[in-house]
Length: 337
Image (cartoon, rainbow, N blue to C red; front, side, top):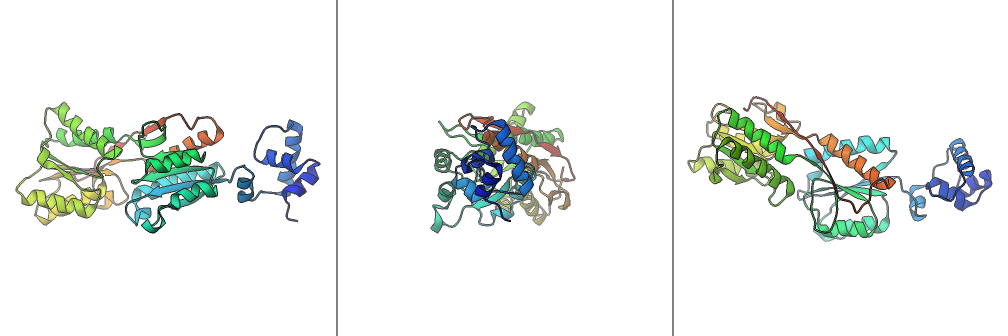
């Protein structure tokens, strides 16, 4: 027999509304009645349909993962799928299912808004390069709790964010190069005007300041977080006659691109130019030579985001309270330095 809310109410000798309040963990039910209803639910194996629970104002049992990316192939990005693994690990432990939402083409600009109107999720974990304040304000108005992976700051909008210590990681990387006698350290930056890019460049400058070296502005390049662009920019720098003795790239893919440009011009890594990347993607230890890099704990980013979202869903934390969880990084030394 397929049980319904009504049949469970009949077996328990209570109203349909009482069963609904028990299922949705709402107040107004005597402890002995709650225990009886829960016992019958367990005996019958009854599980309410998620959409029915949502329409009744209860829980859907779903967590949404929303990604706003620039690259149409961003779902294959190394950062995304490792963070997602961390989210999935703990969502399963909390008995939640995951729904993936990704920004669509320009012809469907209102897609992000339908997440709020359809109420398919109890909460959201949001990541990506193109998160607009408009989106976050809208989800707040719809009373959908959310956590951001990656720090964002909007005046008057307190946010719950989980982020890596980008400044500390870049500081470690640059200091490592300086301690090995490198003084002309090129910097290949990622996406301009983002929190993580600003923090990394600040760490790069801090290490120089402490060591008594001023970073050379002619060695600072915009790699746009892209391997091909980094290869191009590094090639242009070398062809202009400027020769760094080290490179710090804001992600591993750009470090690969920089090394390709170096190899094309007959330069050796690390003998002529040492190279450090950032992220420690899966390909980093298998590149030739294996890449020294700053390891982000991407799985932990996902797990911490899920834990913070659960605090919001349980009411342990106010959605109007700002909260930053900052995860430390680790310098992984390999053959490129």
